[in-house]
Length: 324
Image (cartoon, rainbow, N blue to C red; front, side, top):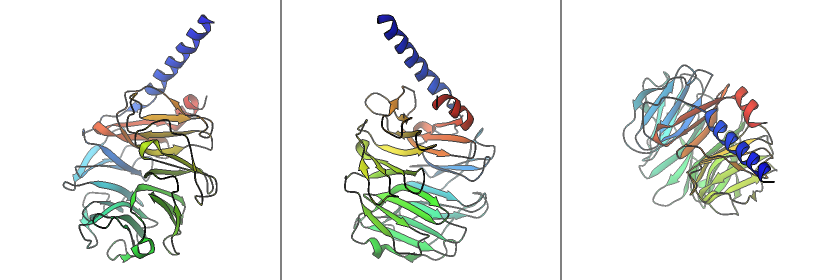
């Protein structure tokens, strides 16, 4: 029995070390907190810092990252590109900026009050987009819509005027369906219909969203909050927490296999994995710092976080290592 236990411990430790080493650590030009990222192809991607206005870009699939520009001090929350040229970034103090040349130049769009803190920007094409946020004085939710690339914005906030605001939790279901979160959930179809509001009856603040299909999805957030839906977000069930830290991002490769990342807990863990649709979550000891985002490019999964952290794993290697 002792020999068997030693074998089990050895296999667990080997798996833990191997799980870490298969994630490639990329040289980073910054020690800032990397908060949100987007890829439009295997080659082209952008990531924004949280506090310093820094924007990084890759043109070689993430093998190297360069500082593209700084937008000045202040929180940046969300970045979205519809192609390699047209992109938007939003943040605090009513700031929304746009590029039409891949990030070489950025310009302010809209004329918003500085009490508006924007946390999500998402465009369906280069003209039609939505931004979500919170009024820092009233704590009310904000929604604005544009049909001309951001030159003009329609205020649709009255549709959620009795609700609290939004975090950076967003997921695109299909070409025309979007869900966002905060202390509640809102689902919209290109902003053309009334927003469908679902109350988060379990409490807590949502920080990350991911749907495997139109029905099954996950939400994670503060104090280890994990929620699951099987009806497209109309109702949510609470999953027993395995951490008391902030869980910031969730990603599933299929219905069974997924990851959650967030702030390091008391055991120094900032990443968890499931192989059984979330029935159980495995932790593996790594030297990852606080992680803010797990995202996908066509060929890789990516991790971004504190201390300028950039990690990736080839999806084929993921299939070999994490699904066995």
